[in-house]
Length: 112
Length: 108
Image (cartoon, rainbow over all chains, first blue to last red; front, side, top):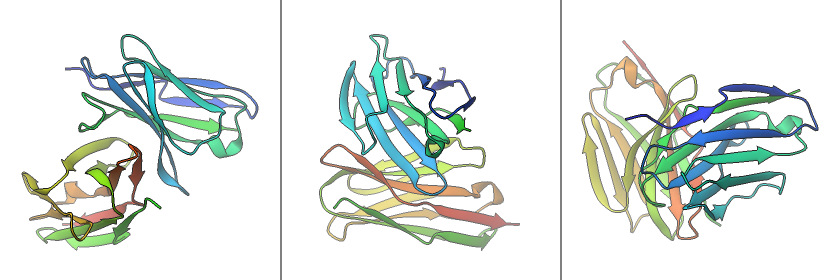
């Protein structure tokens, strides 16, 4: 059974650019959530999708957005990148919105 | 305010020792998660608890709803248990709030 797949694994972007990260959940999992991890702030919740609907959103500016497709794959987008957006972005999938999570390996974004 | 406090921040142990990591949260949670993160970033979900106690191999997680407290225990610790352990509380607002993590190093 394939795990949660995040692409790309590493990414370097310039300030002001935008970026799109992808997450393919485990087959059958309809809930996908996104997290940002930085050395200073630790792990923080970004948003959660269930059946193509955003169910919850963390305290991040509107530059951070996401969506979920009918096959449960999810993307997150960050526009107008800032240096502080450099982080490890993790997604996790579960069978229900309150189920145990399976995490992807993450995308390490560096903004220069 | 929904918060999660975790202690200790760092923990070192000799192989074979019994380890306890603590997590406190405020009211209104629907579930408490324990996660393990190895160097390199990969996160593994260890337990999801809403009451009582769960055991998987040498790992035991407990939760006391009245005291708003959860513990993760590792029996007979091993160097491969070295990792960061993170608790996360899912509040009734549906938001997942994370503790700051406990960095565990187990020496042979």
